[in-house]
Length: 100
Image 1 (tube, rainbow, N blue to C red):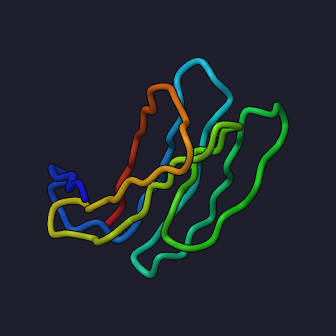
Image 2: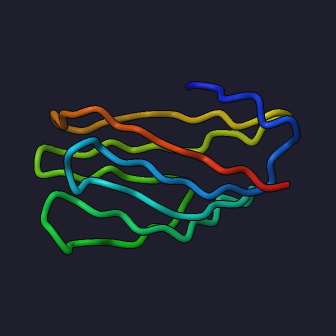
């Protein structure tokens, strides 16, 4: 688990974008403290997407996937867990915009 702090308040929701550099692998969505996600995940097949439920975002690729799960909403940010299956490669970058 990895904690991300510095929000300056206890977040109640977030907009999340995660992508792998120089690929079409991405995940974008909204999440709230109840774990409800409105998200879309794209993979390396152009124009192929899927929607998510649960407190997670996927980075899908033909070599496997990375899963980013919201573990907890903290006093000054969030705690995330990262897991992967098979051997996806590349560097993932993410942005999170918190809401009160």
